[in-house]
Length: 122
Image 1 (tube, helix red, strand yellow):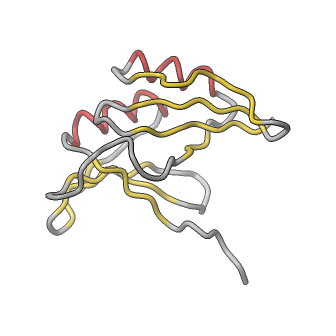
Image 2 (spheres, helix red, strand yellow; image 1 turned 180 degrees about the vertical axis):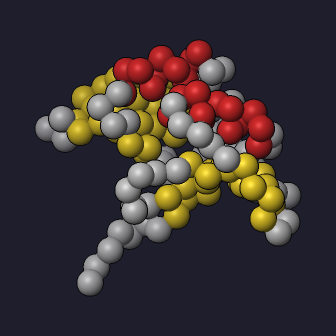
């Protein structure tokens, strides 16, 4: 059986409380923080059993805008999520744009300096 190619995504942060508050506001869901061994992590929860993600604060794991662009599911609320990015202290880098026949996306920078995106199916 073939599953998802990506199994887990860790988003680097330098201030776990600030980052958790940002994503909690934008995603409109609880983002619990845990101390796990030598790192602090905040879970970006999902109702579905699919690819998961967390915010991770640990030595040597540095936020940035270089590297892979991770798309988070917008769940038919792309415009609301992009609005909340700015309300929560982030920056919309590319506003809502169409991706051919697939759907819509918007790219943003979080409070930690990471560049990510939201995707919404048509």
